[in-house]
Amino acid sequence: MSGVIMVDYGSNWREHRRFALMTLRNFGLGKNSMEDRIHEEIKYLVSTLEESVGKTLSPRVMFHNAASNIICQVLFARRYEYDDVLIKQIVQCFTENTKMANGPWAMLYDSFPIIRNLPLPFQKAFQNMETCRNITIDLINEHKTTRVPGEPRDFIDCYLDELEKRGNDRSSFSDDQLIMYSLDLYVAGTDTTSNTLLTGFLYLMNYPHIQEKCQQEIDQVLQGKDRASFEDRHKMPYTQAVIHEIQRIANTVPLSVFHCTNRDTELMGYSIPKGTAIIENLTSVLNEEGQWKFPHEFNPENFLDVKGEFVKPEAFMPFSAGPRTCLGEGLARMELFLMMVTLLHKFKFIWPEDAGQPDFTPVFGITMNPKPYDMKVQLRMPQ
Image (cartoon, rainbow, N blue to C red; front, side, top):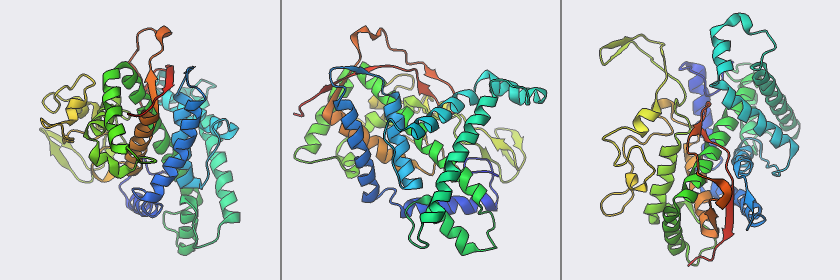
């Protein structure tokens, strides 16, 4: 049993990727309907921040919940309040597992099979996955009793329609695959976006001149408008450059998803047999000398030409490349732009005076995320 993330270039993987691309496109990824869903969630972000004006808050849970709710709407056609017990449980399970996956216990588990049945800390990861699996099974069973065939509300309904259409000839489609697929898409749609937002506001607070320049551009473009549109990005070259630079510096998934050779090949004198798992190092391209003006520092000039227009270098590939490019790239790009533009339009974000020097060193896991930090929020009057 494997979801969309596992290394598998066989017919099962191709079938499921094709199905996912078609289904996600039908549910509005890259369209106005998805913009509306994101803006609905942004209202809750804004409300949370308004309640914290003049105070200090930790943004980690807030951003995780916002990203979680957007992908939950696509998968399950529902959102959860930020203090909902269920969503807290899910976010905690995945947060613990992404940290554990690249930690010492994971290495010991891989290196010494004899210890795998011992009651050691890595068993917590399996308990967490079982918890999330059971929650997903409950959601799928609920959909089975409430769905109207041919009138899908979300990804799960579409998958159940596909199962029904295939009858006994389901090929690779099954209830078990639906469970794994839903979990894969949930993780991919939550952790990466929330960690990129966390990285973004950490840097913007500590580079206030960059934050202010973004706000000036946003004010000018949104003058007289109720809200930002994804199309507005074409009128915001500097803000676009800042968001892309945040993605580059965040390097949220440094090893991406694994690829696999589909034929015997040779690279730089090395023979690589067919079926070899390939782990790409995205850090090498996102910080490569000669590809970036400032490869080792946070600087939006990496994405601006001499005229101040936005440009995207070929080495910018945070969503990977090839047939395993991130399924949710369109959704992630829209989320990051609409969230950051809306929040920067309404608020000023300040590094707390008593917080000491910022620590930009990331915490390693399956995804990289910044160390926990606090922020201060002020309402601003757009000029």
